[in-house]
Image (cartoon, rainbow over all chains, first blue to last red; front, side, top):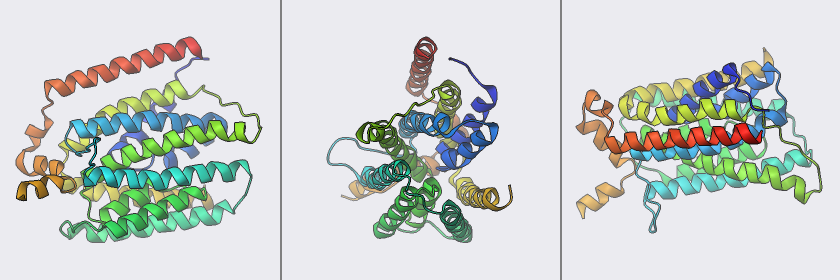
Length: 265
Length: 55
């Protein structure tokens, strides 16, 4: 059934705008809200992955177009392209592991691991805010590998928070904020493609039946796609010092939101 | 050699735009970029038509 749901379009637009311009929040923010509205996990999770794959590549393309990043897709790759591939590889491994764990119902206590990720994101957000006055530091590749692996590990065990950890990890590793956002957009798109593939392939491999409900796709895709066109432009136009404030504050609020959802809401 | 190092620096293009262009200059969108945005919108409309037929 083809139907556009206005509230879903608006929410997808808002969260994708923030995701494509501050590098985080689409999955972490939108998923629980759609559950609250009354949608089921199989109506939400695969649709968000499909949408994130398309909007991530779209945002990445326009980040490149607006000069926020300079990917080089022909060999030899430049540094920024190698960073994007490294981050994506950790995420791809993690999302396959995560889907595998879900299908095998290897339940880990979600509240403990989600609390750990929320606290991690809050601490990283606070450190990033303290670093606001510092001048941009030099690039630290080992630190970036550590944060990519940490974000991948979190996603792999089903704790989420991949965007905030990768985004803040890049900033701690000395990557320019506007460029870090573009890197996250494309690597998240690649991770989402792997997520969609493993979502479809895993039941086939395990001889299980699964029926994905595409009802939300037109609405999520509409909001997300428009946001993916606009966000790279917003990133280009606003001065980097504004992103230096927005990114840690937004990460901090995501961390607090995860904790509140677990223990208060 | 120096310019090569500069070009390989992460985020050099974004930094260059930030340093050399004013806020209003950054607001201007090139015609070629506008065309690509319109093509993207056309792709979006096509996808929605396909979805309306298949769903």
